[in-house]
Length: 474
Ligand SMILES: [Fe+2]
Image (cartoon, rainbow, N blue to C red; front, side, top):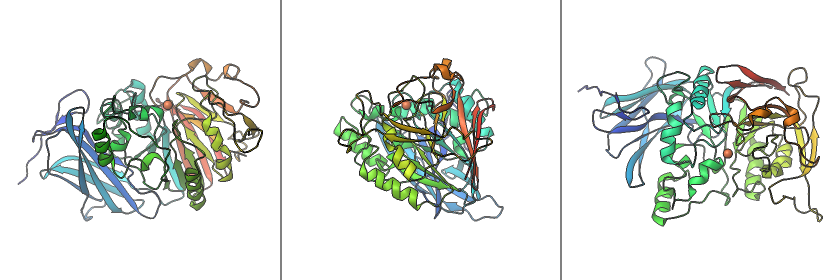
């Protein structure tokens, strides 16, 4: 028997009531799932309802007419948080072909609830993707960036941390994150249905882990509920650890298994790009041998033309905000050794691009240890490639470090924009003019396109204006 569900928009944001009584708290959205390499392709579809159970099915097929329908395997977690139970559903879409367009639909008791399309990862030597961080505030600027990103038709989006403000809570994702990225209305005021067709890779920023104190934030660390990333990272002990009520911790571990804590660090391939995603929060240790060994193997095994590393807190930053957060500078020699092309970060709410650089952190008198000041500063020896300009000279000597933290949260140091004389300065051991572009008076995102041995990076604002544009070749 065929019956239609009347989907009624109940509240101002996402909440949708089905005719069977469930409230759809988060509509179905796509995630990358545990598909790190180009050996096999899969995706994950997630959605969340109130506690009223339903009989869901997910069907998917190649977009070509007459293609065979396949069913996604659905699992369900009952999240008992803050005396409220909600149901988080997760459907695995496996056995997908690369470079292919698919359609999917979610059915409730046999009737369509939602549908969408997506394109699987490419095996070609080209990519087109978007990067931004520090976004989930529910601001108008977040919606405008979401809208413009949608116009750019990226294959995937990478968020460089501080996915949602202020504490990474389940409730905050529903209020400050999903509305802009799953909006059915496509407009600069509301956003766009990006996540219904484009997978978001995400990492942990400091705001994403502030809710690890379950005694205060029982619905914290929601990154591990809502995102579904590759599980190929190291088994590092330097990961976020929830504290508080034992039952809450037990429930969290059971509801996020096997994603917590595995999704703290991971990597993935898309086309000719390989991206290693790291957790750089205060409990992390960039020189943890387990992490460094994993990273070395991960990057050495990759045959991709472009090797990119991403983490939240930038070591090379000429803004006043977060200037002392320099611990990630310690990883620079490792990244140089592993021939990383570019590092993408956030945390500082503006856009910054360094000259290609290499950095040797200063050691103590014994020569055995790197030195870190009490404030977190890391001195060392900089070597800048001043001849690279991204236009006439496109072959950099060194790594280009990008801060792209202007995705929606309030901007930092707007008066510094385009005024190098105002940028933070220090002793030659701690700061040299490594930053060549700093745009802090407008929200923006990074569009990266690769084609073989050519990479083009454009920084764009919410209206589609290009604020920075460089080419790298090899
Ligand atoms: Fe941050």
